[in-house]
Image (cartoon, rainbow, N blue to C red; front, side, top):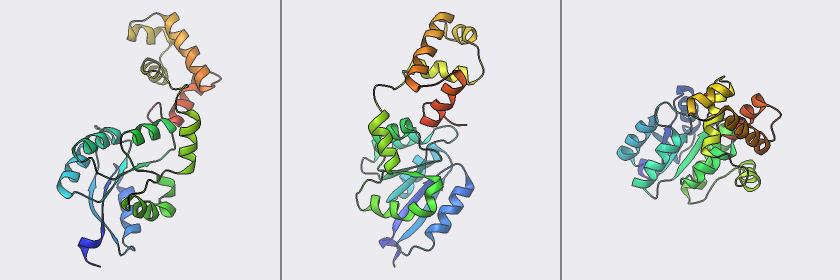
Length: 210
């Protein structure tokens, strides 16, 4: 099949093994080719401008500019860009942000072997490809129990090992205010304690997994 007839794919991910795995999977597909690779959000934008791929696979967590920022930037410049979010976890908050930012697909790295080719073909045809578990999470969780920007800020500092007093000092608020925010967060996340709250927030995508 002539190159011009193939689905041209750009992969943006900071892990070389992911690129290798995707390249290996695509080499057996006569209607697809990996035309470019990027290892940061900024590089993804530059490569998109240069290559104008049909489908872009975009990791959410990359050094410097992350995938969500890169996705938004590309969509502003190229509104018809078809971008599939590539991630290691199914956090509903990250999914919602990516979808609201214009992503047309959400692909878990753990399911690349089974879902990569089908996802690329479907989004190239103009379809959306959102896994059922992500759609279910969005339907049941996204909304009333979202954490506020201040709550996320506090939880990020708590995750770093800071006490309520230190968090208060860093944010110029009282220790009692921090405790009040923590109480609200634990109720929203149905968490048993601070550590449990941080764990749930990471799983759901409120906090980035390093």
